Length: 305
Image 1 (spheres, one colour):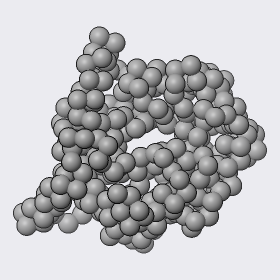
Image 2 (cartoon, helix red, strand yellow; image 1 turned 90 degrees about the horizontal axis):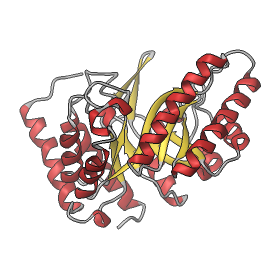
Image 3 (cartoon, rainbow, N blue to C red; image 1 turned 180 degrees about the vertical axis):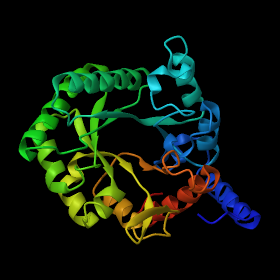
Image 4 (cartoon, rainbow, N blue to C red; image 1 turned 60 degrees about the vertical axis):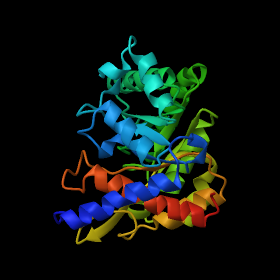
């Protein structure tokens, strides 16, 4: 990535002020339903994350790692003796936790390995319940061996987790990721799971770039299942795909967001800036308010007030 000049940093920093004035942080009801994932700010502590969201017009934060650890249930902020104060930290800033994102994969058919993955997902469900967060993300991930067998196995696993999540007031979301990025595969899994406590986390970049799908088709097939989103822009460079600031790449983020709004989507539009995996990306101080400005424009064009 090209280094950011002082002039560019000041320009991007001004976006934060613009977003704040458009969405007064004193009242959450005045904010648009935009959020960001902590994947984009791996060096920020808990309070800095919340304060930045509060002061830059965001309504929600998705939890995906904190200060270098992806094992969120082990973080001190989420320990039983601190969880009440942590909930208060969120509420005091008028924010919500939109999703607690695990790394659990549902594809493994080895009984011992699969039980480990289910156990990990249950830990995250417990954390989401303690935080009053509505969703936990899991992966289908890889299709190894007989395709239909893996699809049936993943659907059964989602139902099993849903049974655990239901009394805890949490829903389980499979992300469009890995070998599960096309509407046909995802739709089949979700249809077979057949549970009101199972839904889709639509990573709209993955279905467009990897799944080669027009977002009109994706939303028409999967829209009734979409509960949460990951939004990010990218540009192909040779055989590689590089993430870029919102609106600078080849992914129709504007169209994706507006299709969701037109389809009656009630969730958050969550920015997933993969800084953990790609440290060369622009800093969150730049990328987050930049997304807030772009998302504000896109949603207002779709009729949001």
